[in-house]
Amino acid sequence: MRITALMSIAAGTTVWAAPPAVTANRSLTVCLETGTDGLIRSTAAPIASRVFASIGVRINWGPDTDACRKNQGAITVHLSYATRSTRAPHAWASARPFGAAEIVVFYDRIQETMRTRHAPRLLSYVLVHEITHVLQGVDGHSGVGIMKAAWDDDDLFEMNWERLQFAPQDVSLIYLGLEGRAGRLIASKLSPAGLQ
Image 1 (cartoon, rainbow, N blue to C red):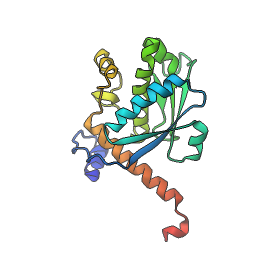
Image 2: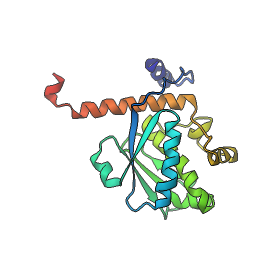
Image 3: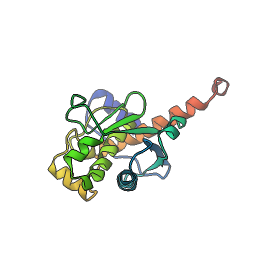
């Protein structure tokens, strides 16, 4: 199945095999910036964890961004409270799917878009969306679900009830991305002598 999915990606087709069975050993460390307010840690992070848990991926929330610097496979999340209007004007966040595993969330825009009490829920899905970009290693979007380029009112309603889901092809790409990350981490720890 992996070869089929990779060949489909390379060919630009949209034919997908069913996602692999959920297993218990898929996990990832994500670190929120030091100083992140407690509401985000107590509300947004648990919701994001539940969304990933629904596809068998466990998120381990690191204590801060310093901890992530020591963990090669971790993703770092920074929050912007004063985002320039010229920086990705219609976006709620930005990720680097091809380089450093870093996400910048434009939290001031999220607060402006949703009433403050609903901002952590929207933030949860923004985190899930951007973490998924990093895991998949692509900047493309899906036609439905969490990885849509722009969410509409129906999507926001589904978020409110934690019912907005991943499209099946996104789940497959997440699994492939996690496997690739694990392989790269193992390879980086092997000494040249261990490769002989």
